[in-house]
Image 1: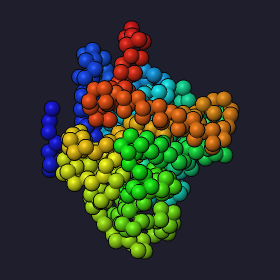
Image 2: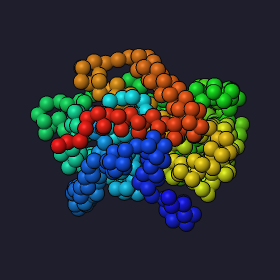
Image 3: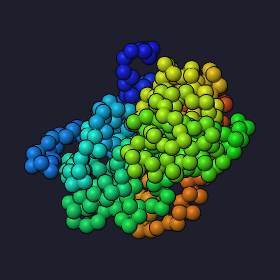
Image 4: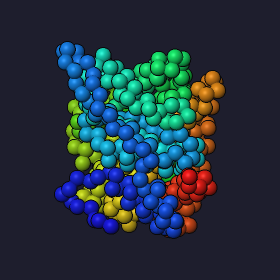
Amino acid sequence: MTTENVAAPINAWQVAQRQFDLAAEMLNLDSGLRRVLREPRRELTVHFPVHMDDGSVQVFTGYRVQHNLGRGPAKGGIRYHQDVTLDEVKALAMWMTWKCAVVGIPYGGGKGGVVVDPKKLSKKELEGLSRRFFTEISVLVGPERDIPAPDVNTTPQIMAWFMDTYSMHAGYTVPGVVTGKPISLGGSEGRNEATARGAVYTIVKAAAHLGLDLKKAKVAVQGYGNAGSIAAQLMRDEGGTIVAVSDSTGGIRNMAGLDPDKVLAWKKEHGTVQGFPGSEDISNAELLETECDVLIPAAYENQITIRNADKVKAKIVAEAANGPTTPEADEILHRRGVFMIPDILCNAGGVTVSYFEWVQDLNRDHWTEADVNAKLKVIMEKAFGEVLALSEQHRVNMRTGAYLNAVQRVADATAMRGLYP
Ligand code: GLU
C-alpha cells in the first residue's frame, strides 16, 4: 500500500480502490470476486461537437462509467466541471455502487462527467452540450439500464433536456431515464433537498449516539451548492449555529452565527459567499480547520488529507460530498476520536429519493413531500444503525463499517448470480 505523498495530487480512483481493498481483505472476499469488483464494468469516453454562440464549433470530452450492475441498473449523477477526469468518474461510479448497497436500493453504480466550466457557457450552449452529450451516452443509458441524475453543476433544467433528448429519440416520453427532474416533468417532491436532508438525518443520529446537543452545536459547511446550502439551512432548523461556510471562491466566518438564507441570497447576487456583511473572509483550508462541532464537507474529493486532518476541530465530520477524505486522513481522524459519517452513507439521501422518483415515474404516480421525507428518514436511520453496529462489532471506523455492509451485499448478489457464461 502506498502512503499519501504530501506533494503529489491525490488520485480519487486509487483512493476508491484502496477503500475497497481494505473491506475486501476484512471480509476475506474470494480473490476472483475481488478482481471483478475492483474494476468498472464499462467505461465510455466521448468527444462531441457543440455549436457555440460565436459561430464556432467546439469539441468537448465526456464520460459515462458503469461500475457494477449486479443489484440493478447503474445509477449515478453527471457532473460538469473543468477538472473532470476518467479516473475521477471511475471513483465516483464505484462509490455509487457501495452507496446504493448501503441504503439497500436496487441499483448498481454509475457516474458521468463532462470536462467543461458551465459558468462560461450561455444557456443555449449549455443546452446544446447537454443534448449532444446525452445522445452520445445513449448507447448505455435507459430506465432499465442506467439512470443519470444531477451532480456538481448540473440542475433539474439539465435533467429536463436529458429526458427530452432521450424521449425524442424514443418517440415517446420516458421520464424514468433520468432523476432529479423538475416536478412538472415527473420529478419527485423533496428530491432537491434530499442529499442534505438525508445527511442531516444521519447527523441527528450521530449526535444522539455521541450525546452531543445539536442546539448548542457550531456547524461549518464547505461548499454552498445544492447539498451545502440546504444542509446549512436544515442544520440551522435543528438549532445549530452556522459559524462558517464556503464555495469555490473562498469562505466566510462569524462565530456568532451566519443566516444561511441570507448567505444564499448574497451568493446569488454576487456569485460568491465572500464579502457577506458581518463576516470575515477565510480560505477553504481555514474553513476545514474552523472551531466547530459538526463539519460538513459538501464540495469535492480530497479536501481532508494527511496535511490538515490533525487540524480538524469538529467532533462529527459528515460527508455530504463524495470522497472528501483520503484514507490516511481517515486514520488520523479515527485516532483522534472524530466521528466520521462516510459519504456512501451520509449523502445517500440524494440517490434514495432518486430511487423514489424512478419508482413514481415507472408507476405514473406522485407522492407527497411528507411521504417522501418519511420514507427517506426510515431508510437513512436504518442504514446508519446497521453501519454503526458493524463498526462497533469490528472496532473499525464508520467508513469501514459502511464498506463491510455494502461490499458484502454486492458480493453476495454477484456470487449468487454466478459467472456468465
Ligand atoms: N449525484 C448524487 C450522488 O452522488 C445523486 C445520484 C443519483 O441521484 O443518482 O449521490
